[in-house]
Length: 126
Image (cartoon, rainbow, N blue to C red; front, side, top):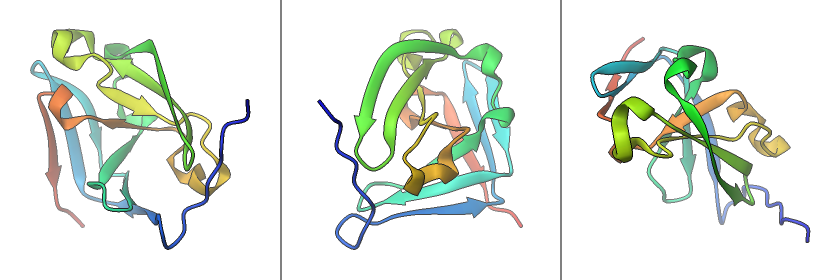
């Protein structure tokens, strides 16, 4: 069975905007990510999501899980837990490692669920 592939359009817009805001992700008092090079993805009416470059994430604190999902706009999605956060931090981060061409900008980035980490701090910056 072939997975459907959809392109963003006026009925389901998706924008990806580079940001120089400082973004910090903390779990159980540990810095998991720190970046000034995030991408802000706004999809339709959903809340905006910060995608952090993989090189700005301490991947030693994350463990890939078997959980996977599919988005017809972005592609196959992989998930990561942050073990130091315990049960709360299961599948706390996600990544489209080979996104559809229309969403190629988010390749090599991860995003975090705000309710599965201690904090996602955003400091507006130049």
